[in-house]
Length: 337
Image (cartoon, rainbow, N blue to C red; front, top):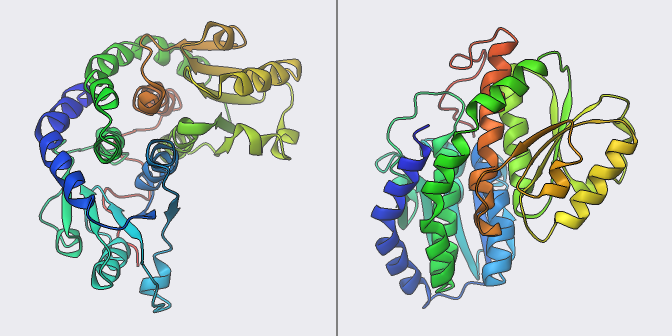
């Protein structure tokens, strides 16, 4: 519930520094973006693949940290802008990617909620998330802050004032979306017997499908697989039987026609659809529609569309008798090499 305030604080504090950073980077040769991340931060990186591609025409690749930590590979970083995304800044493999890239002369940036950990010494530049202490093991406000920071960086690099203005409208839209809490709790209680599910989206919200699936697995221990709507139809659709649970994330945007066609096909197969959308035609296909109360610019939509998924995972876990604040076998900070 702190997410509207957290995102507003980030935008207030970091807009001017990030715009200055964008001006400094304009002197660098940047042909592509390379992002090192793990877990929830990896899902933020998936968002960046669409965001930087559409906004700046930059290809985005996800780093392979074990090349640096286990195989000792000497990679070439010519033309790369290298980002490390880490809530804690304490994962050695992310630090290693940034350190190697910086040593090779590539511009490096870290997005982190902790400005003094080891990662801070690996990257040349820092964008601080400033969300305060996140006590939940499952990331929520750090994830949306990562998305906001990535959007702030991409839009600043593009000198996209209209996009930056749309970003400033997000805290109000986030607050409106969190008001769905009671509705989502009722849906989660009704669906508590689910034993497996898939999450589906496309475009910017492909990342949202991954993040919602991760939250359900982390908190409720229910196998939930994320898919692109296109990939799902290349084989995994064979999973669908009567009442098979599908969570479809479909805010207004360029992919709506594709998602509507898939939703209609799934209904004809008698799947059980939970649809998160602000598009009436898509909501009409759902067994359980969750109507987003605020429509935002498509590039910003992952920040609002993920919130019903966070709420669903929270209430779904509780409905199944689990404590979402203490999921078993995982910790807040995971250090991998």
